[in-house]
Amino acid sequence: MTTTPRRAGKNVAQAIERPTVEYVTARALAESDTLAEATPKVLQAICEALGWDHAALWNVDAEAKLLRRLSRSPRMQCPATASGASRPA
Image 1 (cartoon, helix red, strand yellow):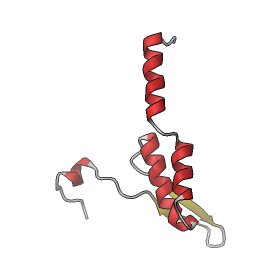
Image 2: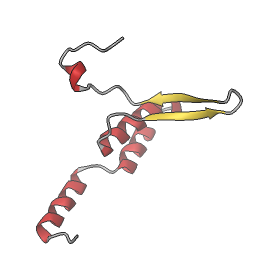
Image 3: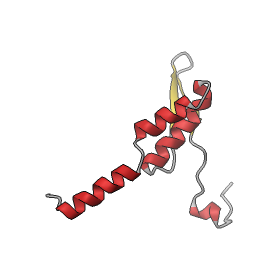
Image 4: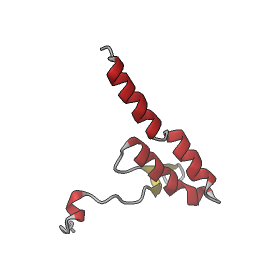
């Protein structure tokens, strides 16, 4: 598939406007005093940069033989919760 010059220009303009994942992650780390404080910010930055709804950081607890969630991105509003619909219990 070849990209026409017009389409290529549009893609370049979009790339310039949208910060890179590396940049937003580095900024979130730089603005935090600890890794624990930075982690939710990093996950949120990754979600925003990539258009994801959710991200989480997991760690293997080898001793307990468990996978533990260390952090997650702040909850995004989904259409059902934004409209006031209740969640199932």
